[in-house]
Image (cartoon, rainbow, N blue to C red; front, side, top):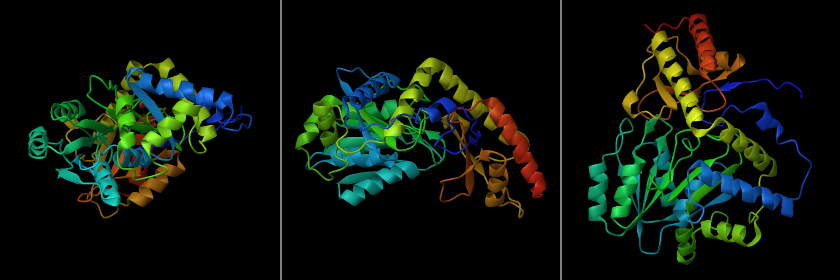
Length: 372
């Protein structure tokens, strides 16, 4: 096998992949309507449930062709019954994206907005549910990837259930990296994309959720054709296939990535991501950068770093310097503060982070940027 240049991606996905996942895409051409390919997707759907400890008699996984945002669209447009509302617990850019989907479909919603620097106030969530008995869906992103804040989804899910609502969580940047048990964590629907925690390729996304609720949604208002959850689920159940053309090579890569996920093991993989995060935190501190989020509420996957107060600082120049040497850093997503992000996703370990900070120090020296 030809050696493939390895880049260390410190952006929040797509993540650094193994060569075996990359090469899994090199397969004989196949029509995705063949029984053989439907069998592969059936196994993939079953394995996805195992990642989040979802019982197969209650939950299913539904595959879609697209980036992670397609999952947000699918869940929001498909799961709100006639005459009901959705409550979005919003403390950042990705919860805001859910609000924008509500607005686009004209779905009645409550945007319970709070500080991007903090976890949501559970008392405010409870009060909002008390005041709005017509809320049928509560929605909250598990990990606000724009900042690194980890939200208390188990508690939010419990509040939703105690008020007769279902709970949907965007787990795009935690699934496969932070252990998730959908039953214990009170999650009725979660979601992710293959290129994030599973360390596969872009183009395949999936929703994991309760079968009974999907089947009930058949009678809800239909707001989309391509992105309707029941329509895609029903087609899988009848034929074993996606309704429309699937991302064939990406599915092969995802199947290989899942083999590697189970071989590494949930506990070991979480520990590795934690090592990487701690190495990022350590390196940032040693160089003299400041961060914006209290580590006590961070996910352990993303560190938001403030731009230094030095006229020589240029994110673009530092990014390009690092990029040319095999390391990718990423802009922040906080509208009020200039930040960049360093992320612990992908097939990397703490040694890669140590190597990165050598390059970052060289960049600071090269551009005469002072941090201390």
